[in-house]
Amino acid sequence: MHSSAGVRAQTIHQWPSTKVQLMGSPLSLECTVKGTSNPNLYWYRQTEGGGLQMLFYSTVIGQVDSQASENFEASRPQDGHFVLRSKKLLLSDSGFYLCAWSITLS
Image (cartoon, rainbow, N blue to C red; front, side, top):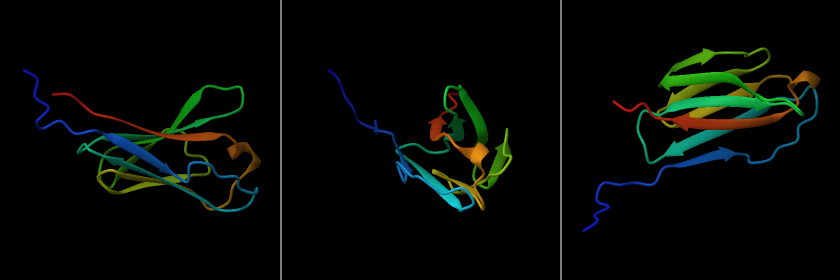
């Protein structure tokens, strides 16, 4: 007998999914994770022809650690909500931005 009681699907949603911005303009990307509590959240950037670079990570609400923030800031106002912002984009900010999550098993 198989029971799925208590099992919830986890989803991650990044908004907007695609965005082209002009150099010098502001940028705001949002990430929402549902179906789990207290996830570890991450923002990555991939440049053309390059690997993934972690920009920020967060393990709890209100606390964000920077790995390579340069021209960006990040905030975690709620458990599953992670926001990435830039006041003024530079040419060097070009790339593919990705939000990810993980859980810590105890």
